[in-house]
Every structure is written in C-alpha cells, then in structure tokens.
Amino acid sequence: MNDNNQTDQRDPVRVFEGVVPHSLLEYMNSSIDTARHEWRPADGRRAATMARNFAELLRASDSFNAMESRACSAARGWAAVVLGKELNGEPLYVLRCVDSGMPSQSYLRHYDSHILTILIILQLADGYDRCGDLVVYKRQRESISLIANVRTKTWLMIEHALPLPVRRALLDRDRSRGRCDRIVCLPGNAYVFNGFVTLHSNFDVESGERRSLIIHYYDPGLTAGLQRITQTFRGFRDRLADLF
Ligand SMILES: [Fe+2]
Image (cartoon, rainbow, N blue to C red; front, side, top):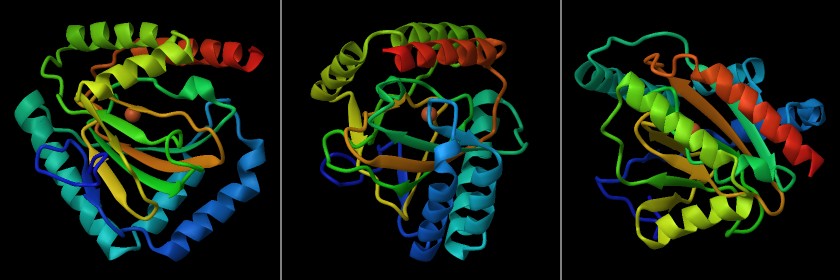
C-alpha cells in the first residue's frame, strides 16, 4: 500500500486487513486512556506488560494468529538464508503513543534491531498531512555485516540530532524523488515488514494522538553495544526537546 492506496509485490510492507476485532480496539484504547497520564519517558513508548497483554488478547483471534504464524515463519526462513542464523526468542512488545508535544519522535529514519516488525494502529491522529503516518524506503539495504550495521546506525543517530525542519526536509526530498512511500494505515489492520533491512520513519503529529502496538521479532544480535548508546543519546535528546 502506498500514497495511492494500491499494493504491488515490490512493496516492502505487507498489509493484513481486519485482523483486529473492533471491540478489542475499543478495549485497548480505553485501557490506555486509564493509564496514559502516568506514561514516561517523553517518547511516548510503553514497553512490556500492557503491550504484551494486548498481544495475548490478539492471539485469541484466528485471523491474527494465522497472520502472525505466517509472518514469523517467513522471517525465520529469511534469517536462515540471508544471515545463516536460526533465530528464536521472545518478541519485544511496544506501545507507542505520540501527540503534537513530541516533535523529537518524528522524522527519525532508522532500521530496527529485529528482523520482523508487526505494526498495529490502535488510534489515528487527526488530519492527514501530519498524522504520524509510517514512511518506508523501497530499496532495502544489502550490507548487513556487524561493521556495516554499526556504521549505518551511528550515521543515522547523528542525523537524529538534526533539527526537526531539517529531518523533515530530508524525508520530503526522498519522497519527491520516489525513494520512499507513505503507508496510510488503518486501525484493525496489521502492517508487516522487515525493519532490519527496510529504512523507515514517521511523520509528526499535529493534532490528536496516534497510538500503535508494535511487536518486534528475532534480534540477530548485530546491534552490539549500540543499543545502550542509542538509549542514552535518546534520553539526552528528549530532555533537550522538553526544555525547548
Ligand atoms: Fe522501527
């Protein structure tokens, strides 16, 4: 799916429509409403318990189960062929709630540490142009050695420190050159992609709050010590964003 709301086989994102029952979406949003005011840190992320509970509820749905099973099987197959690794392990569960007060969380081009990402939108923000939509690059990276991964992530971390207008301009330039597509997401659908090789980012949110459940599967361990550096860097950047 892209800006024209069409799909083709080259799309890096696979869309599974209607895998989240409407009643469950309502339950998840009301649960978040109850606890949202307590959420810190400033990036709107809430890992672990609530996100994991939501995922367990989703697994009661046959259509979600079938989708997750297919996606996981394909990701493990990819890891075996491309990385020569047999990957297992617990997924990482994240809830992400972003509003207009979090400009530092937008236009951050990155690769995920995990191979498989399943994105489920729980609630859309207002409007269309600046509603937090996902943007994915069409050309997937081919160089995925440990050294290449550290080099790329270090470069992207530096890019994340640029002011928001510059980060936005970089993404707009790439969109105008046809290098990336906006993914117009709808609540109830699942968006599945290999975030380890697919560069991606999000628009900012001008009004309202966008809520997403994100499940990451299979970390091949190529991030080494970068995760701690990235977390420290993010914390410092968020504190600056809070000040200004
Ligand atoms: Fe990501």
